[in-house]
Image (cartoon, rainbow over all chains, first blue to last red; front, side, top):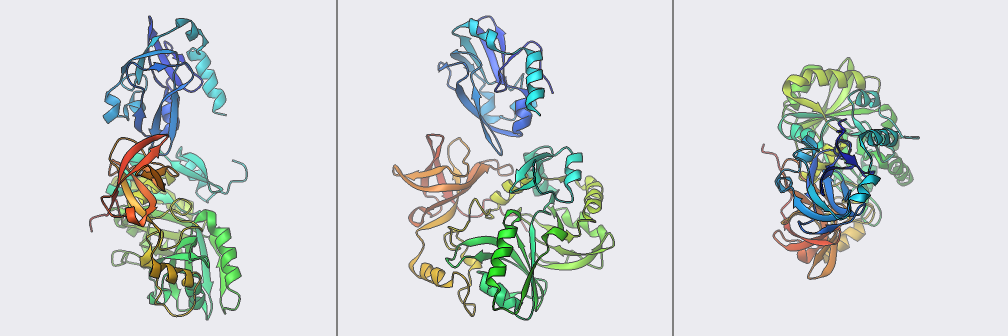
Length: 129
Length: 367
């Protein structure tokens, strides 16, 4: 399982790449494997506000629906339009072409509450049992 | 994991890395690699399913036919030797105890194949109804494994393993007996995918060897093992009902739009006859329809349907169809809204999404 070292992670299996006051977010490799074939992604509209830990959209596989939670509070500054026609990018490249949205942070201080790669790897190993 | 029942192929699924789930008390593979890939393999090549969890109940004796007729909606007297029919195992209210396949094995012997999680309930029901009939019912499920090969390459892959039975002349919903790995097996041209294929009934002891042999021999033909996830999406594209989703003991045969398996003209009494005769004469209030979404979204079991701002029905099955590549499903709607082309809405987590009724089935294979 792929857990890049330069990202931050949530307990609900989202990742965020922090670059200054903007973060790019998606779901982790573990999440896409658990869900299976992803066929639908519903992300919040550009310009909408999201709150850390609160649902901001959903990802659906053939079998199931899974909510996605905002890894940080702020304003949605971009949404990955490719996912409308190619939701399978979340399976194929969850940390790259499968990014879901960008958030302009309201408060970069709350990012310290997220897990780093080592902590997330331990968390996944634990929840797998 | 506790107390889940296992089929004789459980170790095979685990060795293949399948994702296992609790399916009605059975530890079953939901997928091996990908539901979409497994689904498409069945439509275009071949998929192999472990369906050993299904229930097999034999009804035998001088009045075996009379008992089957009393229990079921279809007319089993029309069956020729080794012919199969889809039927309803009915409550006295004309609803479903289960749906099943009835196989005529002899004038005095029938095989009923029922849903896995209903087997014990069905068998108890049949025993309770058999009093007064000179016929006995036997639950052979624990000693019967079942492997289904589904898809256009099924015949080509299976035939080399079968001696004493030419599979090609067997028509859809007929069966025969042949020898497979030294064992006499019932081989039926049936399935739950809307595709051509065969279901092989064999002993639990022989099942792993046949599973492995077919997996190996099928590889050059593109055979893949397929799980219950693909089985569900395949049957939904083909508009085959799923007990517990689309039909249950509160839906009548006519509500379910299964009038073709209701033979009111057959002689004698049967469970549900008077209710169904009345319903047939007066018409049903609701009907199980096929539908597609005309906006983005995915319908799921239990979502409510709306028309003119009123709640009018419920989605019974729904998915993003892997082969047809669109969001579709089945739903109960009032008969007045059941015509193909009728627009309605599905409530997807609080959002009303446009849908329309379409003709059944969603998918029909080219012959």
